[in-house]
Image: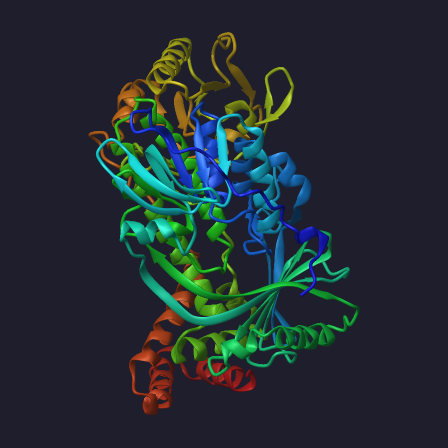
Length: 629
């Protein structure tokens, strides 16, 4: 296997450091794992003034593309963690993609990219390069100490902290920490040592993933072929990356031998066949390859004593829709501000149970969408394969079925059901407490162009709409109360169309056309409180926010309880919801009957439907179904 210059991860000397003395002070936090999630937690804590020690078993960042798609929300997180500019410089933006059934296009999708958006909806960059950028950011921060080649051998904990035994090049060393963050990936050693197991579903589909160096002028988009002539019966996915690197994923047939199919010469042959079918037979080199199975697994709780789990150590989601890395970055940012509040003594440790509840529900949201994508990309049963193939065939002549093939690309998850989220009044329009508040372009009253996140910084932000003088004064007092309650956490204040001059050092936003107010569903007199991780905590008149400082310190629900409004995923349009329900029900029905009766079930189903829709519509449907395959 050749190695491209773009894929040579930097190697570091294995760490050597002295053991801590038994009587010395404990480290505030030890993070186990220097992947994107672990380093994200470390940077989030360090920016809040908390020293962090990171332990990584390897002596360098990961090798190969692995997770390549970084969402807009993760780009926002990267900016807040201090490495967004360098990541943007390296990455390749893209907005959509196409899917083909054999050689016929059956889907063309575009992700939302409104004029007010600050960043592209998605960028591609290899995980190896992302991790190197983050490792460089950690090395540059005086409060982050990163030990390479330092796996954890064992640990014990008591009510005050955790004792870690670490293997180093100079022998075993002892560290003691008040809290440990386990972010050591899908094969987590910390999970094994803790004695906890992931629960959920593992899918049958198997994929080979490969990076090739291939100068080609094809567009930067997600391209998928179902049953292409180059690899009959398979599904092939292609993504363009920077530096003329292409990521190719292809599915193995259930009857194929995974060991044989993951030999380098076999991988080369299958990629050669596909590129030749595309009419692109120029030279290319194989840089890296791996093997993947889809999983939807999670720990029941992400908090186990003083060990806090995050990223793949806490949960696994199927690769389709690119939710693994992006949900892990959400974990990192949420855990960082909550753990900082606990370490600073300004919040009860119950706030960490809120982290667990929120992020477990986020995993459920991701699985709900990724699970449907997985059933299309790698159907694991006879019923789902039959219906998937039927959908693809129908989509060639009936484009209204194409939405079922949509990959449901990753988007920021909500925390509407969080015990921390303060319920809004019934019937509240627009943004609901718990919703992600995306960054957007805004203009200050003095005409300066900026963005909402630049106004907010890394902390909380109060945004008041159309406040009268008394409400402005009350909101400024609330800002002071929150800042005093939250210690080192920043609390900003911005006013939109106030009825009086803004106080000194308070941002005033120009929303002359009401675009921000309309996007949020804001009404005059309302104050919105945005959390450090970009989620809306509460909204309403400032008089109703007096209990927020105590609420945040307690980390528990207010008397009103958590918001349940819109707890489920956003509803599909009725016609699309009906098709989705029919697809899932038919798939399950075919799997529930004996194999010998499947054709009979379809015949009986067709006759029942004919009795309801009428002869003309039924005959037209039979003609369409018979002519597509």
